[in-house]
Structures are given as structure tokens and as C-alpha cells.
Image (tube, rainbow, N blue to C red; front, side):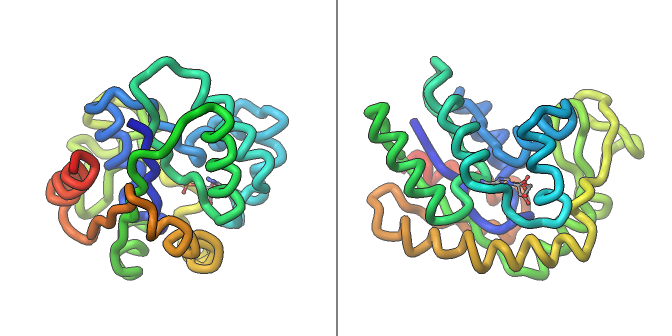
Length: 213
Ligand code: AMP
């Protein structure tokens, strides 16, 4: 099964996508995670991407599209889950072209949505494990031991772009560049929507339902 999760920052693509990919045996391809790892490793791509990421704007398409193509074709797993890609219509077109070239297709494109105030609250309180990538929230799902991941004991940190000024920019970029994907995908047979405003378990159940049916 090949699927795309898209929606605004903070809607839960990462948290829900990680769990769904694990349960279904899919490769979890999150362009934000891949880019952060490239920045951390100081690679050429990472150096080019850093300033865009710090300001909350999109990294140029050619960098991101290149990173995805090698990954969707380079794994022998049961399929992939794309999280954070495509992020604009040009990337969606590039994805369609690369899938065509490799004789592949998308089974589901899932749009996750929640009110903007909820997104801001989630992002501004978010803490992420440096080791395993699992997310916590200072108020809504705090770790058992402050600063440490419940799952693996890794160190928790706040992403640089989860500061309020950068969050506002990311939401604006989302509205202008990513939301048009709704019109691009809406008529596709695999298109589904999930209301992601609720509690984590309920959202996961709704997501699983639309992926399986
Ligand atoms: P995310 O972890 O998905 O919130 O992404 C963090 C940042 O990485 C974004 O604000 C962008 O700067 C960059 N990024 C992630 N995915 C993409 C993409 N598909 N296209 C362009 N930039 C991206």
C-alpha cells in the first residue's frame, strides 16, 4: 500500500504516520525528518536546506523531489507512507511522474485537518525525542520523566521552528502553497479526509478506518 498523509503543520501527520507505518509495515518517509537529519549531518543538501527550514518556508522542490525518488523506489517493503510530501502542486506533479515511471500508484491520499488554534497549541507545546522521533506535549501528553522519552529514554527537545513566530509563517506557507493540494487530489478515487481535532487514539482509529476502507 502506498499512501500520502497531508495537512497543516501540527495536525499529527508525524505521530499518526509513524504508528500507521509501523503497524502496516510501510516505509515512513517524512521529508522534514530526512531534511533535519541532513542538517544535523552537515551534508550539502542539509546546508542548502537549513535557512529555509529555520524561517518556516519550503525548501526548493528539486532538493526534496530528488530525496524522495531514491527512497520510494529503493526499499523492498510493503509500500510507503509519505508524510510532509508533496507540499505543493509542483511536488504532487513530480510525484505522479515518478510513480508513472516506476509503474507505481497511490492507494490513498489522506487529508488530515484541525482548527488553526489547536495546531498552534500543539506545535508550541511540542517536545520531540532526539533518538526515536516520538512526540510529546508539555500539557496534553507530558513524558513521565521530564526531558526524557517514555519509549526509549532519549533526550526531548523543542524544534527551532516550533517557536511562535516561525509557526505563524509555517501556517501561512501551508495555506498558500499546500492547501491547493486539496483541489489537486479531491477527485482521486483514493482521496479521504480525517478530522484530526480530537484525542490521539480517536484520530488514529479514524485514520486506520479510511486507510483500510
Ligand atoms: P515538517 O517536519 O514536515 O514540519 O517540515 C519542517 C520543514 O522542512 C518545513 O518547514 C520545510 O522548511 C521543510 N520541508 C519538509 N518537507 C518539505 C517539502 N516536501 N518541501 C519543501 N520543504 C519541506
